[in-house]
Each structure stands twice: as C-alpha cells, then as structure tokens.
Amino acid sequence: LFTYLHLAADKPCTDALLSAGTTGIAYETVHLPDNSLPLLAPMSEVAGRLAPQVGSYHLMRQGGGRGTLMGGVPGVYAAKVVVIGAGVSGQNAAAIALGMQAEVLLLDKNVARLRQMDAIYQGHCQTVASNAYEVERAVLDADLVIGAVLIPGAKAPTLISNELVSRMKPGSVLVDISIDQGGCFEDSHPTTHADPTYLVHNSVFYCVANMPGAVPHTSTYALTNVTLPYAVELANRGWRDALRSDPALALGLNTHEGMLTNAPVAEAHGYDAVALDEVLV
Image (cartoon, rainbow, N blue to C red; front, side):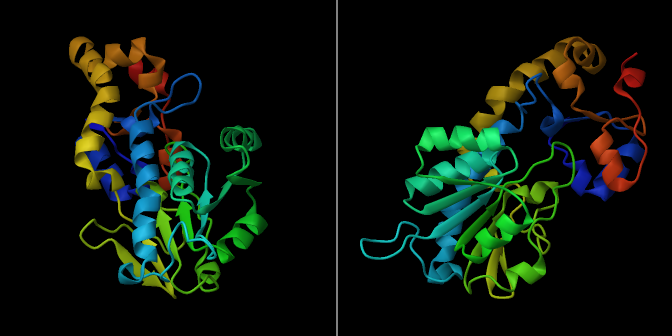
C-alpha cells in the first residue's frame, strides 16, 4: 500500500494495517537528506494556498464569520491573519493571504526560517518566534487563524485551547490544515467538504480532512508529478529492493507483517517500533 496513511492520528487504521499484515509505505514520511518531504510537499502547497481562500469565505457573514473583508478598503482595517507554522503549508498560506492584502503574522520556532520569509517579503509579513505567550497574544487579535503545524509522521501538537478560543473575537475563523495529523486546535475534529464548519464558542472552525480534494484537477497533477517516479521504482524493483536502494523512500515504510517501523506512529499509540534494518534484511 503506497499512499497517504497519517497513522499517528488514526489508531483504528493503524490496527487494521497491522492485523492485515499490510506493507504500508506512507507518502508523508518519505524524507530526503535535507529533511524535506517530497511527497507531502505538493499537497501541503495546495492546502496552504486553499486555507486563506476558505478562511476569507467563512469570514464573510454568509460563511458564518464576522463579516470582514480580507484586504479591507481604503480607510478600513484589513483582516488580521495569523499563520502558525512556517513550513511548506504555512509559507503558502502566508503568501496567498498577503496577496489578498490581509495583515499577516507568521509564527514558527525556527528563527532561520522566519528570517528567510522576512527577506522574501521585505518586512510586509510580520514574523514572530513562536511560544505559548506569543501564540495567545496573536490569536486573541486575529480575524483568521491558520494552523499549519507539522511534526513528520507524528500527531500534531495542540497549540490553541478551548479556553483561548472562548476569548477570541466573535465570528473569527480557524482553519486547521494539520487536521490530517490530528489537528493543532483542542476542539478540532475532521469535517467534510459537504459540511466543512462548526462553531466553538463564537468562532467558526474549518477542519476538512484532505483539503486538496476540493481542487482535484490541480491536486492530481501536483501529486502525480512527484509520486510517479517512486511508484515506477516500486513496480520495477519490488518494494524491498526499492527501499534498500533509496534511503529516503525507506523512511516511508510504516507497517510490515504486523510490525510498526515508524517510531513517531508507535509512540502516538503506545506501541513498540522495530528498526527498518530488521525489516529490509
């Protein structure tokens, strides 16, 4: 099975794959030597670019929000957009929000990455080193919050509590891109494209799993561009030889014959993990 698995956020799926003895290779845990995630990146780009679009819709009154225009107009404040996480999805979310002329604040623990974003946007995107105090301060002032946090393979950390949401502006909107990895807001739970939002206190939560499914034409091409070479290698060489010859692809192996080979997934569910070398011998 070669696909997105997101097992850290889904114990029933993990147990089913282990019980079936499935060899599961997860797109989202394939790592290149520079720690980039080549098979997750295109969907992170799509979800990141979608987040301000869906957020701006739900900020409108008919979308359930406070009735705020992202870019404002002359003489009226633009929307205040907070993006938590400056990885691939967060960077793309910030880019689109800035293009919509919103006021954008980007938080991340990686100051080097924030420095890079500051250089790209020449100060037009505010960057702040992330900690509990700064997250709270930013969220309370926000019209739109985009959660774009990722720990590869692991469950997303909870950064925004129910209590904090209770103090946010009425009609504010929260978009949780991290929902496929369990979500980074305490009250996040997966929703669908048909029924995407729900209220928490006086704020609108958008937690659609598989956000790129809203734009399948774009997403299919973006994903196939990067997955096809790996799929060809798996088909031509068989999974074991393909993984032995490509350490990046080998890191995608999550399950095999009832064993977990991904440590963050095992930790999320309280299971033991076996070393990759033991499986690939």
